[in-house]
Length: 434
Image 1 (cartoon, rainbow, N blue to C red):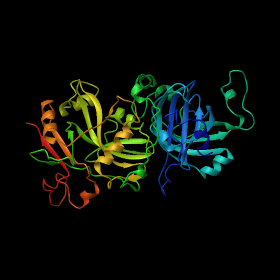
Image 2 (cartoon, rainbow, N blue to C red; image 1 turned 45 degrees about the vertical axis):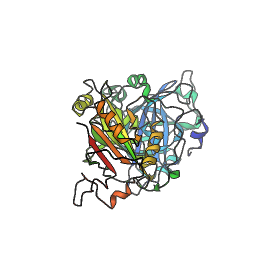
Image 3 (cartoon, rainbow, N blue to C red; image 1 turned 180 degrees about the vertical axis):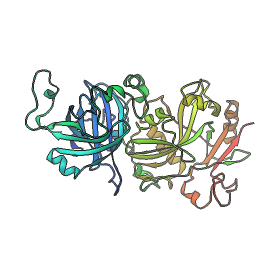
Image 4 (cartoon, rainbow, N blue to C red; image 1 turned 90 degrees about the vertical axis):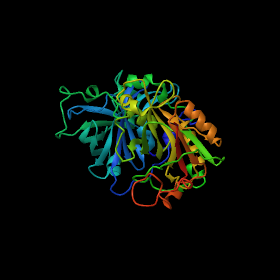
């Protein structure tokens, strides 16, 4: 089917959904992903999506999946969706195609029990799911002939040739419907643990009409590349005085946890400097990052508890992660290292920040994602003002600095062997108040 029908149904000057583009080619041996999104549109249904051929093959399942092999669920084939759509959880405004609330109900990987594309054309696709709620064998069987046209039948609204049945195979994961209705027993989001009602009440998760794509290839110094498995965050060198000159950008230092936000195929992960996964500790941050219009990205920032007076304090972060205390959890992004299949290590910091600011502007404000703004030049005055406001310090960064330059000299504060960068050569410097 491809993405022609998906694009035809949407006016991207109005809707904020991602334009349909083929996803990156799957690497040999890489598992295929699947996702199920609970969608409260004109009628509540579940969107069942399987990665195949660089797109998400999609079916609308009015009653959702069942673990009972005796229960055959109607699954209506709909247009293919782009890969990044699979990470979406939030609100599509009324009046736009598919307007309503979307909850990420399940996700994982799937494996066909034969030739997937051939079996799909034949109308009998058997596969195994390994997800957070569903597991084991399932089958999609295409209905022969015209669907039931009884008054009130859910098949009435759909074309004759798009009706399928979603059926659970008989295996250890099968359970009678009388014993468990999986959709009723597990209504929560696998991304944020929220309910459909909680998502609907949060206006910071709205798809907005300014979510047009940004062109990473047009940024000077960007290089087409594969998303790296890991990355070492830039370190700042502790110095005594704020550097002078207009070649420096100055940011307020934030108290919190340094976190890398890594996204691919619509799934965001939050990783600390040691590589520990914080995604489940801060699901609302990962959920908000899923709204960013990007097929792949790496963002550097600080996860912090924002207090009512506008300051951050490391000591209240743990409370905020548990939903307690006065601090409101927020992610302050200050650098963009990789975006839409492009390595940005050779891009000047100021240009990286411009791209990051434009990317964050594509999601609703105010929300849990915040851009870390800066002031160019006037370092001493900026430092004095930051300290007066109660900030722990100031981070100064050369506006023309590239990450590639770090490969020649190991940054101060990083682990491993090598000479520390002298303060006069460090491209990132921090000066503490008090």
